[in-house]
Image (tube, rainbow, N blue to C red; front, side, top):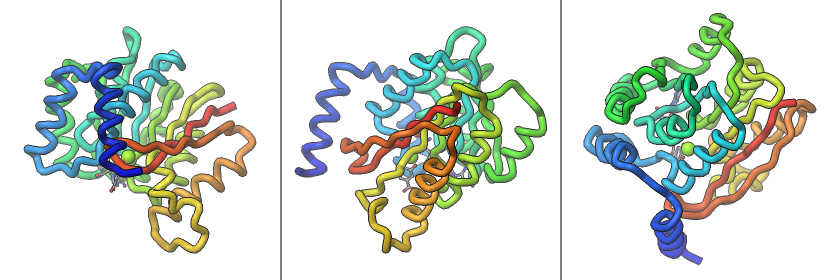
Length: 221
Ligand code: SAH
Ligand code: DHB
Ligand code: MG
């Protein structure tokens, strides 16, 4: 089976089921024009996040790793009235492109982009003692996965849904010999999740337009 076939099937799925609107398509164009690497979630994955937000009834979302806010906008489209997103991004240029995409999509009032290393902005967020987050999407530097999971737990509440992107890594997650820092970040996340009795989780392998990877999905008890 080839990446080309996975891409064709993703096209088939997206053509029929995934309503990528102008705001989302424009965001991808602006990302490319701004020189951002095309490592956003795929359209089918963005719709999946959107559905998870709707299914969980989430009102307050935290995202770690904004890039150009493609995933952010997919999730924003699922929010009920009064819902909001805080999204954390290290690169000022990514945040600038993201803020423009968010404004163009009409979500400037509901999505806040905070710039800085998430390991530094997460404790600041916690210190504000805002309401807990209902949904957390973690998709930033993979070696810090366990740091971000710890903060997601602290900033969540019983019932909070946490989704962690890129955990399968072309299957390398099952390679105990790997010294790739991203694979080690993924394996560390699995160990943390397995050891925490408050987390009920699974992970799904995915193929598609973005290759072979996967998500971990969990709920906080
Ligand atoms: N969620 C986005 C893709 C994010 S790509 C989407 O699907 O559309 C990963 C992002 O995490 C990049 O923009 C990268 O700059 C950012 N990042 C990397 N290290 C980070 C850190 N320490 N803190 C916050 N963001 C970080
Ligand atoms: C990379 C990061 C991602 O979040 C992703 O979904 C795909 C690739 C990367 O850093 O290469
Ligand atoms: Mg990702």
